Picture (tube, helix red, strand yellow):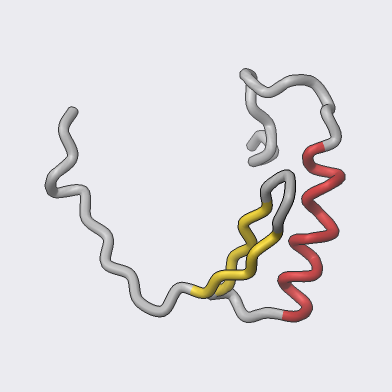
Amino acid sequence: MPDATENADAPPDDGFEEAARPLIRWIAEHLDPHHKVIATARTAEIVRGKRLFQTEDYLRD
C-alpha cells in the first residue's frame, strides 16, 4: 500500500512533510485528539471542536 503522503499531483520533495512533522508531534504530546492547528504565513491558531454534525444529504453532484 502506498504511503498516505504520496500524491501524484504534489511537487517533488518541497519540505512540507519535514516542516509539518514537528508540529504534529507537538500536538500529539501536548493536546488531546480534538484539537487542530490552523497555520498561515503570519499566525498559528489552536482550535478545538466542541460539537460537530456532518451530513452529505444536500450536496449536489
